[in-house]
Image (cartoon, rainbow over all chains, first blue to last red):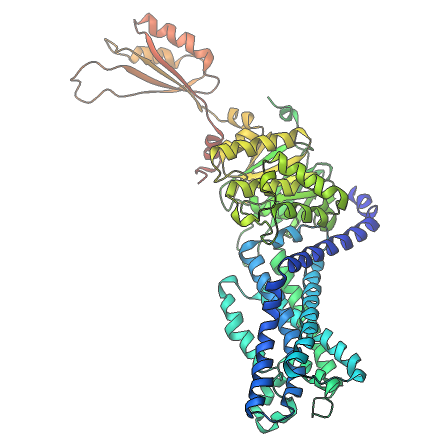
Length: 271
Length: 343
């Protein structure tokens, strides 16, 4: 067949142009984030900021929480920021793009494999998640006066945050491709709220042994292992799930979410 | 007549030689009892304007979906610019551009950035992007609105932006879905003019439409699809000529002063006349005499019959007061082939 030649010849050029297309799409996303920076900051920071203010500062000042609560709350809020930011970055735009704006079509027709379009979305979501989490650190210092920090815990801290951001992106990819546009409200009421409050971000998971059923529910939320992993890195004196279990569960969650998410993305992209 | 009239569709299997081609294409969607596309083959020459005509559900959108890498065929092959779109969709995407019916512009950025980012996705060197975007925006009458976001654009303006965007990476083949449906007449003519310019530049255009006027105005060749099958494929004039007895000749004279049966018989003997209808005078026979109105259904051209018919009428003292030649349209071709109207 005559096409085999034309397929072989530009193979190397294609690899380069695929990388170029991938970076161009990422560049577009970063450009839009930059032009909408105040919106982005408000979107990602307000929720954890208020949780930090009320639970970490106000309740403590009023004497409703014991000393040290803010310390174990802070890593949990970082986990929440990391997971929720990347999930939101992916899920909502994706529902809209596949559902009614159809903006994604121009990317799906770019000269790169469909899987790279999904990969760009995951990478971009993770980048936004890192930025949001990084901003939370100075905010924590300002609100709480000081934050728990251990330089020796930094490697684990970074690895868990990266995995948390990617797991959040995986959740966003799954939800964004499976939720029909008409049901976008479901994302909020049935998914976000439970996810927010069962992810061990406001409590250390082992302490739940007294509320067994809630402990079981929390164990099913991957965010729990991000919160616990960050506590293991920064406040190891508080009882926490072993970091190895956290890493294993996060890697397994990531594998499952990504394979389901990418498959679902392909189904939406190509009939 | 267009040169495309001489172009004989290539046989199956040689679709890869054409600018755009499908060969024995079949697509059955999961859970569907029938094939959405059911064994379609055609080959579009480089630089040709090719119209895919059919009602909703005919399979034209699915066919274009396969060609533009968005639909995976059940069997058969599809080529764009010599690239097998099923085996190498990434390379195929570099060859083509798509202008959908509804806007899919990037709402977060200006239309100028819509064009520039699209070019970046397709690897147009960064130093060329801005100049090319401005050039196209000017050509499409959009330069003064270059910094506006697409939200504020009318349907016709969005259409123009999408065509301009599609041209940023100089595609070999451009697929347009109902390019001017819903546009006002001026916007429609503007888009038609731009498309003719593209044709002149050698870009291959594939239009899907259920608009007969659009197909007749733009397409070198038209393929008529229904129920997933290709019913006919030819230049519009040839499709129309293929219609049996579809040309009509309407003759009107002053009121006859006697029986007309002999006259109708003689008219019926003229070459190419298949059938004659006479507008019936009002029932009862009372009232003032009425004009004689005849419609001749012809198998061939109408013009050569006007003079002999006029002679026959004059022999009986009847003077022609009105002559109308009815030429069939693509719509008639479609009705003839499918037994139904397009909408």
